[in-house]
Length: 217
Image 1: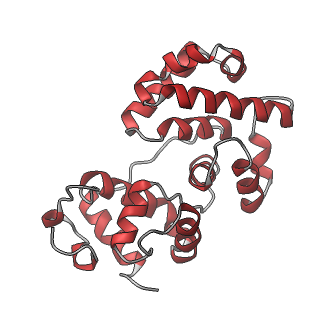
Image 2: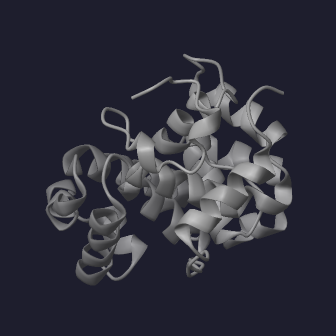
């Protein structure tokens, strides 16, 4: 392993960020769609998009069969709404075809690998989305690697520059102990948004700057 000790990074980030705020656990299908909505936007915008979608279409059956343009209009605040509307309806159509109903709670009876295989076989669902469902909806020790986690862990030397999403998930899942994956994921996401930004990182305030491979800002 290269880079700093994983638990020490978490300790320093948690000292800087404060206690972890608990997150409500959603049904499996809700978390899946919420994660799709979270792509390429902020938490605030994605949460608002999810709220507006469920307010306008209270059941997933209604979302599945509504005109795609109406779905896009409901989630417009979440960004790339036309693409996400198509993706959501394709996912729901495939789940309905496989399950007969729009419900994924039976996945809770499967092991982690089986859940991941099922989810990543759905249209447009990759390893990050599957890991989010495992971690947040099911309480499993998955480790989602979004753009912030990928960037920060690359700068820490845990990932090689240019690592693919699949490689990043494989490497970091092996590196990060299961008992801290939830906390470290959230801490790295927060750090990537507030401090270790892509273009203009706030290096002077970074609590883990001593291990950064990026060099002086």
